[in-house]
Image (cartoon, rainbow, N blue to C red; front, side, top):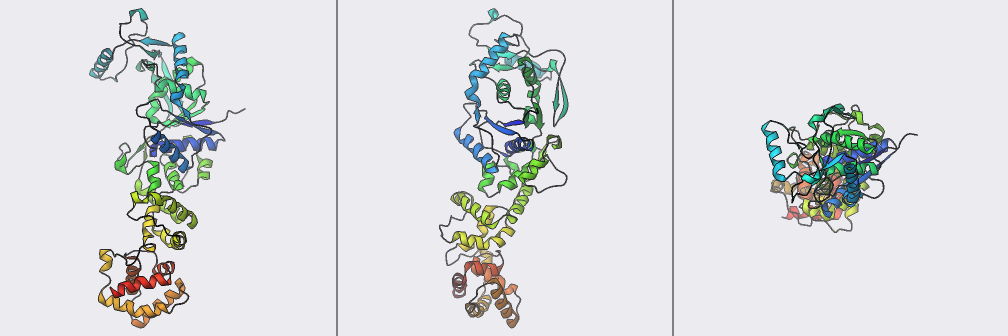
Length: 474
């Protein structure tokens, strides 16, 4: 019987869920779904000083917004400290670990000597074979794992390929600190085993950890999970991804109006591909995703590509869904937009009516909302400076002549208004643009907006005529 696939996402609650972590979670989620398995969630909160409830809530809400659900309740690593201590004591009793009494000064001296020789700082094993009776007073010991000093450690990584480390280059690492708290190196192995994890998919910043963790699995008699180290994400300049590249937390993208399906689609394409497919649904991702298709080189984060992809999803989204999404953002828009949330009972209907035109020109929901601002602006409108320059005395005379023709329109539809305005332009021997742009400015206060006939229709006859009248009389 084939073992069920179990992956895990294991964030530290020391900050928000950012792009790199979100992609790791997505890859774990997709692999589990693709193989009929499940993804577990473990909160690695052993850094008590930096861990916070706020960061945890941010991580959980970001994953939920992206649609990355997990099986069961989250496992909190800190709560498993006794289990980690138990395993450390077991390793100590079986001779695979030992107490180290090296002082901070000695450890610093080791590091300096290694650097002077051009080597990586490492522990020299001085307490590996010494008896505790030789321990100096006042030094609390750590427990170190006894790494093999000869031979090689090999890993068949599902992304990086076959990798080999010389054991002589791997020092004896700490598994239990002086205060008996476990290190990451021990805790992650114990937790992955106890949680039944079959596939570890994580960033390759953990790559060298695998060389050490393999030996923990071996001496404990546990099966080694399948391991895949995915490349990190870099900016367009090939440097480590940061805010200067436009990379924000998942919830920040949510608050400025990105759609979760667009973010997932973009993240999955950073370092992974399925032929030439650019646009794909979650279901298609699940069907197509596999580890060998992940590249070895760092993925590139391009904010412009994300914006364009989000614009695509907005254009192809259901209008009702977009309006609902915008309304869910309104309580937070004061922090991301100059437009105040509008407590208008007719807001939903107005947005819905304008949506077909609005969404064609918007790359985020906030941008979409800002373009819709003209619907809710109170009279008289405050015109943008360049827009105000359009309404010369000559232009106002044209609008004044058009005004009674618009008043006569009982149907007030895009078709009827277009017919009347085009006929007026023809009779006055002027271009349609010479009427459309002044109308746009009068109705919206801006030089850009949805189609002018749609603007008239969405605003309604009474509001449209009042706004035009305001400008004629000003």
